[in-house]
Image 1 (tube, rainbow, N blue to C red):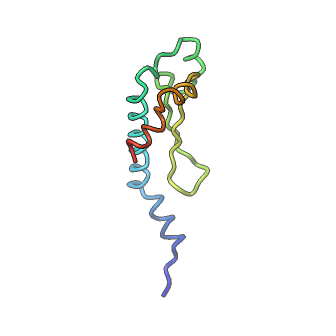
Image 2 (image 1 turned 45 degrees about the horizontal axis):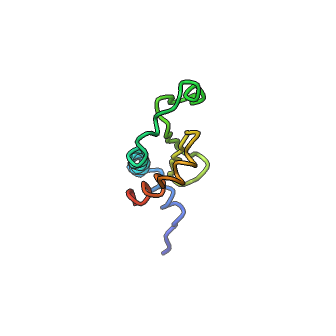
Image 3 (image 1 turned 60 degrees about the vertical axis):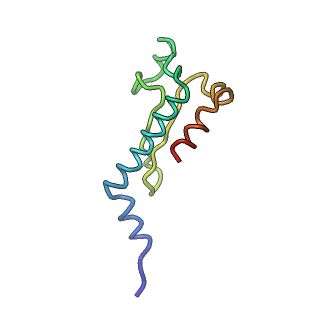
Length: 99
């Protein structure tokens, strides 16, 4: 008797509990990133105008549909994000906090 691991993986990854757990982890990462860089929401109205969906959140979480795995993409939509990562390491530290 052999197990169909592909079917088992598909069943487990499509379970609502799995998707919810992945979303919760992405939310936890966003909170840790915002804690590590408290001035992240300080952007001008002109720059905020480019944030078409969720203009009140600089860090956006999107569910990925391009993979068969439950995946959420955490995107920092801030013009100074690269400089802030270099200066404060807010992304690196947040990932370590959540891991």
